[in-house]
Image (cartoon, rainbow, N blue to C red; front, top):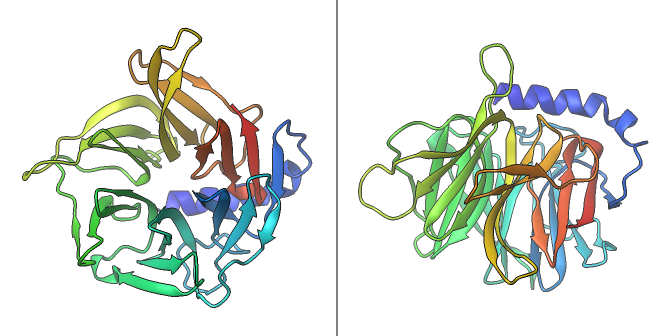
Length: 296
C-alpha cells in the first residue's frame, strides 16, 4: 500500500505539467482526485477520493460527482448528506450505489440520495478497500493493503475472506465474467519496480480457489473490464481491458491469443478504475484531476 500512496503523491506533483497536455479525448475537470465510475440510466457517478491524495485518511472530504452521458456536470457533489472519506471502487445494483470507503462499504440510494447501509469491515484490518464488483447477490471487494479479497452477502450483509490457494500481491481492480473473478495487482518489487500481474480466480467451489495468471507482464494494474468485441464478420472475441499506472495507459488483452495493445490515445497520469459504455471509455485520470471520455 505504501508504494501506491507514494506513487499517488508523485503523480500529484506532476499534475500541473500534465494539465497542459493536449488530449484528443474529451475531459471533465474534477475538483479532487477521481478514482472510480459507475453508470445507471445514462448518468455517471464518479467516486472522488478528495481534494488531497490521501486514500486511507478518514477526513470526510470524499464525494460523488454526477455527470450525464454527454459529460456535463449534473452535480459536483450528488450526495452532500452522506459523509465519505476516500471513496474508491463504485458499483450500482438495484438503484443503490455502493462505494468502498477506506475500511467500510457505503450504500447510497440513487433515488433519495440517502445512505441506506454501511458494512463496517474495520475488523479485517484493511485500511485500503479498493475496487468493488457485484455478482449473484454478492459484492466482492479488494483489500489492497492486506492482499485479500472479501465477499459480502447482500442479503445478510455478512462478509468473509475469499479463500485462495496462493496469496495475491496488492490486489486492486476487479472484474467478474463467466464465473471468474479477474484481479489486477498494483504492486512493486523490492527495488520499487512494477511487479503486478493480472490473475483469474474461479468464484464457485468449497475449497481454496486456485489462482491463475492471465497476463504476466509486470505492471501497476488498476481498473479491469471484460468486454465482448465483434469484428466486421460478426465474430466475437473476449477482451480484458485494464489500466496500468506504469505504462500510463489502458490496454486490451485478447483472452484467446494473449496479445495486448494500448487503446488510449496519449499517456495518462494515474489511470484508475474505468468503465466502458456504448463504445466509450470513461477513464479517471486520478493524478490529473479529470475524467477522460474516449471513443474506442
